[in-house]
Length: 548
Image (cartoon, rainbow, N blue to C red):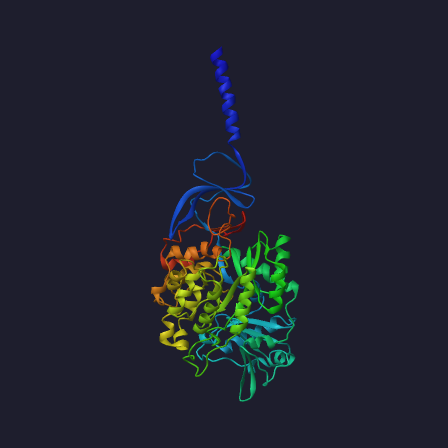
């Protein structure tokens, strides 16, 4: 009798212990191959994941204790779970506006552009301003800037067509007249193009600020942000560094995120101006679970494609032309001093060798080895940097680059800057070595495709994702797959002071994942661009599932 009592008692104890070992979580992801970094190496851990309150709660082996899930229990069946991809330099709002405007990307001639504009106007007669984006004269058989003569009969409303890099705009005569621009109009850091004393409608770099045309409405911006978000989810993006917005647009993003419509985490750089600097330095940084504002975006020069990048010697294909200094050395130095004193991040667009040298010199004066401030100032693009100037990155300056730019520009860049300068341009492996192994990667979308898989491919293969290049461009500057993936995750997180929140799959970090059914680290190189994300998770929510 005593033995029966003891057995009954033990069964009760076992049942109590069994109940107490069942844990309730929000989501349970089973049978996942979880990517884990170890330096520049990567390995997969076959495990289960539990998520609570949007964060990673546990990473467990497949023979773990029992769990109850409040929301979902998903068997990933061996899928590959990577830290959520982060685009370290993009234009999120502008991408959305492009999706709703005239798309001129991929055109092969100016005549083709005109036909696309004409068709859009016929199909959208209610538009007050016709906006387009994406033309690139470097892709045309006749590689010359267009003029507005063929736009004149298309509409009596303003037509604004932005070059693919955003550093030049072609405006029809209606827009030029409304903005009171004439052949005498001048501006520092830009150019109003005329031919035989007649305006062509082309405005380069700062000259674009002369346009006074009705801006997109709040409704149009909201629609654009949500459209861009949908596209970003489809390609596995879980975070974006928005490379420059005014306070008005930052407040709109904050509003949309708070009401639950905009779920994309954004690290927003403030578009600098004297007024914006004063406002934000007095106010201080803005930080929520989805929005981080603690940096300013500056422009030191223009783009290589429109010959606006500031070079130390003339362009190889335009005599006595050195590009444009968008902001003066004294202005940049003064702004850098204010940001350093207030411990804000400074992120500066620098393309040409002269612009890069100038900004690196300014940065170094505030980021010397004796400084204890962790400012993480960034050079955005760092396209043409002389080898001797790369040493400045050892001071903690971060080069933020876009691998797709190299493979988009490779067909014409040597003509623009010559063989000597091209030898040290787009030098991503060398830049990474100089910057102590930190190289955040982005796309600059909508200049390039927002698909991070294309970034990954361009970085490792140095080939164009569209397949037109059979041989790689300066393959000695390619990154390994592990280095490229780190650039899209860990390095991008570090460049935004978020290395303890995102960029890796670790307990306590946000549950942001880009999930594939193929191992992107070992699949055939030529198959990479055809890969599609299977699922996208942001802050513990599955925001996208690939349709079956």
